[in-house]
Image (cartoon, rainbow, N blue to C red; front, side):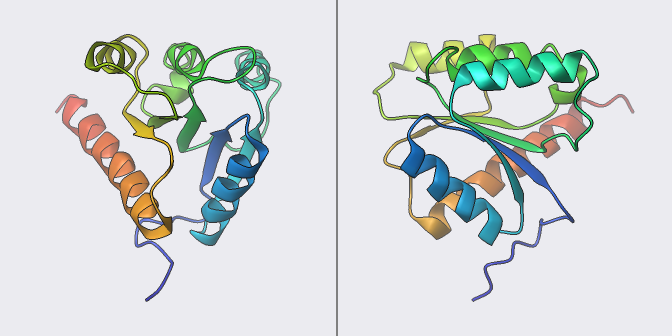
Length: 153
């Protein structure tokens, strides 16, 4: 079975933010195996600082086409970063998924999805390699479909 995804495009960038080094390295490696290039951050604050550069026009790299962040990280929480990202035009249609090892109530999940613009919350431990691949691609495809439906005819 091929590990390549039919949706892989040339040099697709994924932003991954996770404060646990082992999880960050594992997810970044999976990302590369799936044919994507990861931009990694080990805290919400570092993503926040990177967003400062993006908004100031100082970041000249390719923008990520998918964002996967932990919720509870040092500095800023993943949902806070996501909420800010949704105010930046470059990220308004970018799929954003958050990971968490903590149990969230239905109300907490709904609030993050509505108020912070989250597309999916993934519980830890993360699914296995193939299942995670399918899940992340489904999140991306759902966001693309939603974006296409919301475009004026």
